[in-house]
Image 1 (cartoon, one colour):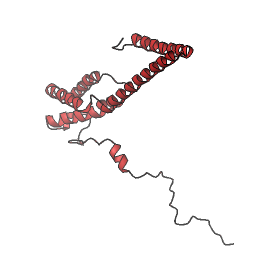
Image 2: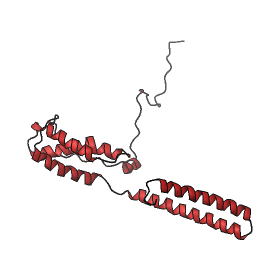
Image 3: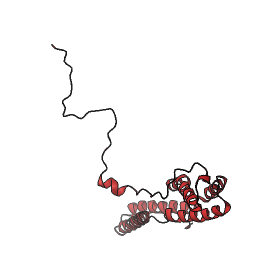
Image 4: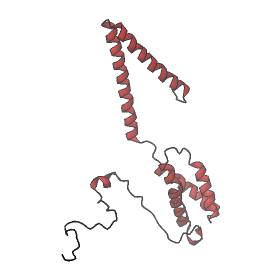
Length: 186
């Protein structure tokens, strides 16, 4: 035999060992959030505002840094509750990097505007989802009570007592949990 080397036919794609990326589908484009538009990106910013010429450029750059370093991580953390401590420390850090006190005051106004624009107060889908769960829960309670009444009227007292005890225990547990928690209903 000749020194033949086995090879794959040309119809199989080459495998370079690099992972293949799938093409973006229409669904991916519709679901993915829009990339925020970066306004006035300057490459001369190197942790100091001395290289930026105008007050507007400095404040614009500080707002971009605030969004990147403070606001975006705050919005991504579901347990984050207060951003105002970061707000004050951020403004102080920007003054240390070269902003004047007047520019720091303007920066505070711009940051409040950025907070108002970027933080969304109400997620309507979550509201509807919670409302739907509450309605389903109430319908479940009503059907359980109707089963209890039906069992009692048909003379099946043993099952009516079991159903009544189970409903009573459930109501008692829910009431005690609401009462002991910081719920406005307790």
